[in-house]
Image (cartoon, rainbow, N blue to C red; front, side):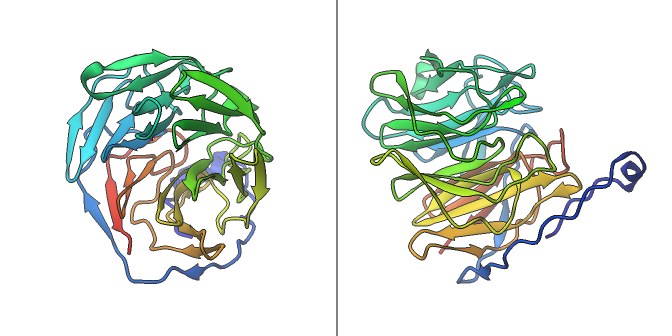
Length: 315
């Protein structure tokens, strides 16, 4: 594991951190691939909300971002309509099927306090407030499956939360379904073959990272345990291309991660992808067709920002 090391001067005032528990050694993913640098995001930031809607990448808020929204269409960034509030650790998903299409941004932190307020953006209509989540939440993950958005994991200020919230974009209503078995914040989640798959995260601390991988079946209203990810980490992002879920980024007490873990749903196992050139946490991870994009984030643990964006063409 390559880490972006914190300056050694911190060693004299930082408690000793126990070594990470070794993870199972995954096999390498098949086929050569290489990361490439793409246009930097205009506003360096971390702890962002990022999602794709109709082929356009949206990055919202974050530390250093405030209420700034920027959109990306290869290889150009454009200023988007400002978010109604300055927010970090929000959750985002794009819905482009039945229901009410648009980019949805849910919850997050405002001045360090979790909120339930949520908004939708569609075309030139600007941001419109939707029904708030049943309770404030930040540091979780949002996943669109059909016309519904599932909000999993996260925290309400200094408390982990387990309820899974479901937003119906057609009715502007929230419901609650089976709770996530392992409550955690700073996790990542994505839709894999119609399931909501949640990976990694932590228990409110950089020193309590998790490798847990659990998937929710909306039809059965049931969570199932899956093989642990090779790398225990929080502050991560994930995106799906085909039947493969790519997990990137993360932080621990002494640095940030560059590992790319790949779960192949067709094989039911993890592999290791090409290492991310710029290790970071609190990043945006999205997929557009067969390209994986990693945007902004923090290169060192805690509050830090970068403008670096990188792409991986997946075969």
